[in-house]
Every structure is written in structure tokens, then in C-alpha cells.
Length: 537
Image 1 (cartoon, rainbow, N blue to C red):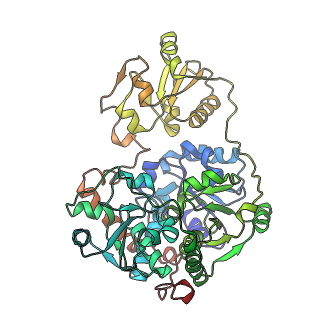
Image 2: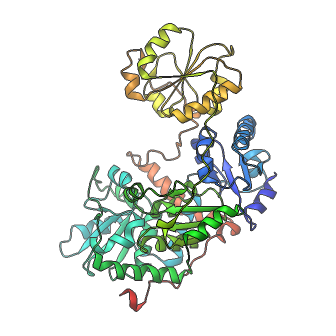
């Protein structure tokens, strides 16, 4: 498929999945705006989650000079049962040659949406220096809520802030700021979740004054202010029963304003059985709630704030149908309102407990005939008994750089063929941290004719303790070889102020890079400045 045809399909009425099958580092350097990252390294492990309907239009692309990888990825998808596959002619270079833009970074549609939302709603914001002054003014009642997931919050946070992920704000913010005179400031690491989180509370019509922290923790750091690390101030686990009716009324007002429809479990089951549209079932609650309730496996855990912030990590099909569930009627309507503005067809599930869906089991595991699995305890004896074996470390490149067995080489799936021995009978030892990924690699080697393959799961600790010579020299791989690692301002949180500035500049410039068709994907109700409904007071 040529670039012009793909551009037309991206913006027509039918579903399409655009898969960038290069590794994460390559994808993050430049990719199509609506592309979903699905590296060849994990294609069979993730494709059914991202593209549940096997007849979906799927277009794969990579680099022009890596046509073998693209073809292999296409064949892998075909083996998984996908029937409507195309390859972008001349890869991403062909797309660029025809004058279409490519983008650096990740989560492009969501981050661009956040920037557009700030302009559309004129979301109030406060600078790091202003917030610092407020926090040190005893007369100023203020609470800072960090809208990121707990693991991100623990890495670094604004001093005194409380972790309340964006998807939980509608349910829990009131308990964290019960006094209407308390000012609420929402922050994230950069911009998107600060903007969306603050505007969420404004749209709900809460009585507090609300601001987004301009540029998040990066803005705080660039202002030469100190961050905290490993904090554990988390949102309250329980919500007062007496608050629930009011919270539901607020969220219902937001849902009505954005015309969010509801469906029941039988309707969802019918949609799934029809097979002519892709339907994604999304549980937007906390990880603990999702793990507790044991819903059908077709229900994907998509925390509400992250589903808005990184939609392409959960939903691989443009123009598909999303069904959200939360069991409380408070969080899902708010998440749905933002997804609707992002251009998705989205519904609320009325009775999630009634879901009775048995998805077709995944079939990604290759049948291996010449492969043996070892344990870390076996590695020393194996290498002693097989001194000519080829040792290939398939862990992440940054992990390989830090520590590895001496005489091991690094390769991942796209580069495995070049690293494998020419003699197909030579023993090959594959080291990795995921048994599923190792089995994919073994399958590739067996298809290539190798007949003596061994797999072993080892992390840095087990490598350091195995009793074999190791190497920790940092020149094991040059940067250009680390195609799985995104160097794009990767150290903006580790003391590199220039990288932080570059990242924020990239984020704020996104809206100037998209074309009119991409912009028209999103829609906003610029007159929506709050719920403004008596039942929500």
C-alpha cells in the first residue's frame, strides 16, 4: 500500500490498525501520528490484545532497509489468523517522501489532545515558583494531587503532594480537599495529565479553585526546586457512602453533556459475537479492584487516567468501539467524556457483573521440536559441556550494557538472524527475562533450520551469582545498536535540564505539527466550564 492510500484509510469511516513493528527506540525517534507501537519482538504476545478482531484492516510498516523484519512480522500476524494485512510501501521513508509528517516521542494522539484541551478550555495553571510560594504561605489552604500512577509518583514528586491518579479524581478528590476554600493543584511529570486532571475537576463543577501545575515535576526541577523521592502519601482507599450520590450526580452531568451512551452486558456480548466491529472492554478502576473482581479475561485493565494519557497502549484499532466499566458510576463517565472528545465511540457498561464472555484462547506459543529449557542452576554446567555454544543475551540493551556473561553477544528478534551461528547444528543458548519472548526467538531459529537451542531465564542478579565470568564494561554496545531503547530525552528526570527543556518544547509544539485531518479527530465543548447543575451541588 502506498502512502497516499494509507492516508486516505486513516481518515475514512472504517476501522484500521497501523502497526509500527520496529523496536521501541526506533519507533520513538519518528513514527506516524496514529501508529501503534507493536515491536516484532513481542508481536504474537500483544497483537490479540491490541487488535482483537482478526479481519481488521492492518497495515504494518518499519524502515525501508529492514524489509525482512517487516515481512517476518506480517507472516507472524498471518500465522495468528489475521486476514487483512498490508505493508506500507517503502516503509516510513516512503511516507516521508510523499510529504507526510512523522513524529518523535510516544503517545502522540493523547499528548496532542492534552495541548489542544488546554487551549480549548483555557485550563487555569500555576507555575512552579508560584506554587512553591503558596506552599510556604501558611494562610494559603492548598493540596497538591499527583495525577500519575503510584509507581511513577514514587520516583519523584512535588514535596507534600498526595498521589491520586487522574482516573480516581472524580471519586476521591473530595476527601483529599473537603474544605471548598482549599485550592487544588494537579501535577504530573510534564503537561498532559496536569491539564486533563485539573480540567476534570473543573468540568465536574467542584466548588474548589483548581489549577494545573505548568510543566509538572519537570517544571519544578527546572525552577531549581527540590523534589521528593519514594513518597507514600496515597489516595484514600475507601469513599464515604454518604458522598456517593453527589459524586454520581456530578459524573452523570458530565456524561449527559457529552452524550455518553450506556449498554448492558447482553448488548456487549452481541457486539462481540457479530465480529464486524472491534469492541474493547476497559476496566478503568485501580489495579487492586481489577485483581479482586476476576472479570472475564477479555476485559482489559486500563486505569482511567492512563487510558486518556496513553490510549494507543491499550487500543490498537482506530475508529473502534470502547465500553468502559467501573461498578460505581463515578469514574467511568468522566473517563468516557475525555475519550469521546478524543474521537472514540465510547459507552458505559451498566451491569459489569453480568458479563459472560469467553474469549478465544491465544495461540501465540510456537510448537518447538529442537528447544530445551534450562534453569539458572544449569548454566554453568551447560557452558562447561558446550564450550563452542553460541551465547546470545536477549535482555533489554541497557541491561546487557550493565552486566552480562563474558563471551555473550546481544541480539533481539530483528537482529537474531545475524547473531545466530552459520552452522545450524551449533548449540545456541538464548538468555532472557521472559519465557514467552524466548520461545518466540526459539521458534524463529527453528524455522531457520537450527536444531540445538536452549532457553534460560536470567536477570542481572542471577547472572551475577551464576559463578561464571561476567563483564560490566559500558562499551558493550554502541547507541545506534540499542534499537529497543528510546534515547529521546530519556534522562530528563535524572538531572539533565536540557533534556527536560527539550521534552517540554516538544510537547507544547505538537499542535503546530499536525495537519487539519489529524486535528479534526478531536472535538471540544469550549462552553463547558463546569457541570453547572443543581443536582451536583
